[in-house]
Amino acid sequence: MISELYDLLKKSYNLVTILGPTAGGKTSFATNLAYLMNSEIISADSRQVYKGMDLGTGKDIEDFFIYEKAIPYHLIDIVDAGEKYNLFQFQKDFFNAFKKISAKNKMPLMCGGTGLYLEAIVENYDLTEVPVNEKLREELENKSLPELTAILQSYKDLHNSTDIDTKKRAIRAIEIAVFIEKNQVVKPNYPKVSSFNIGIKFDRESQKRRITQRLDERLKEGMIEEVQTLLKKGISPETLIYYGLEYKYVTQYLLNEYSFEEMREKLNIAIHQFSKRQMTWFRRMEKKGVKIWWLDGHSSAEEKINRVQQIIKKAS
Image (cartoon, rainbow, N blue to C red):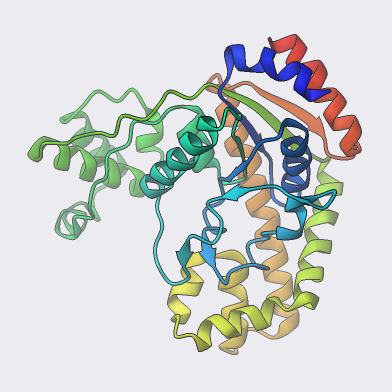
C-alpha cells in the first residue's frame, strides 16, 4: 500500500509534515500514516513539550496506539512544566529526533499546529541562539515601528518582512542583529529538509462545533483538576497564564476572577480565535511558496490514506 509509494516519496523528500488547526484530527491521522509507513512522529506543538500539561494541550496519547501497536513519538513530555521553551530549542530537539529516525531508514513524520515551529523546519530557518538583552529592549520599547524598522535596516537588508510585522518582532530582530555584530556566532549545521506537507481542515461551522465539543469533554475529563495540580506543585499562576488558552483561563477561574460559565465562554472564544490564527499562518506559508496538500477532515482515515497515495503519485 503506502510502502509501495514510499520509495517514490524518498526521491524528493526526507520528511512528511501533517499540519492543521486545533481539534482537526491531526494526531489520529498522523499515527495511522506512521503505522502504514513504519515511521515515527515528531511533535511540533509548543506546549506538548511540557510534562503534566496533558488535557490542556491535547496530547491524545491514546491515539499513538494503532491496532495495539505503539507508534513512537518525540518531543512530547520533554520539559518540566514551569520552564520556558523556545524555537531555538525546538529546532535543536527536532533535528536530534530527525537524525535518529532517519538513521533507522525511516522517514520522520512531523505533526502539529504551532505555525512558527512548523515553518522553521519546512523553510529551513537558519537560527542563532541569542540571549535576551533587557537593557536594549528598554531602550527600544518606546520607539515606533517605523523607527525600529530604520534601526534594523542599519544592521541588515530586510529580506524577511516578518521581522517588522510588529514592534515585538522588530525589537527581537534588532536584539539578534546587535548580538551577531558583537559576537562570533557558530551556527549549527543542520541537514536540509525537503518536506511533503499534508494539511487537514474542516469547514468553518464543523470546526467551531469540534472545538466547543472538545473543550467541554476536556473540562469533564479533569482539565481544571490538572491546572490545580500544577499550582500545587508550585508553578506560579503567572507562569500558567503565560502558557495561554486553557491554562490562562482556568487559572484565572481558580483565582476567582471568573465564574465557571464566564471562564468556559471566554476560553471557547479564545480557542476559536486561535484556530483562525493558525489557518492564517498556514495560508501565509502557502503564499510564500510552501506547498500544502489539504485533506477534507470529514473523510474517513481510509479515504485520507487513499487521497495521500494519489497525491504522492502526482507529486513524485
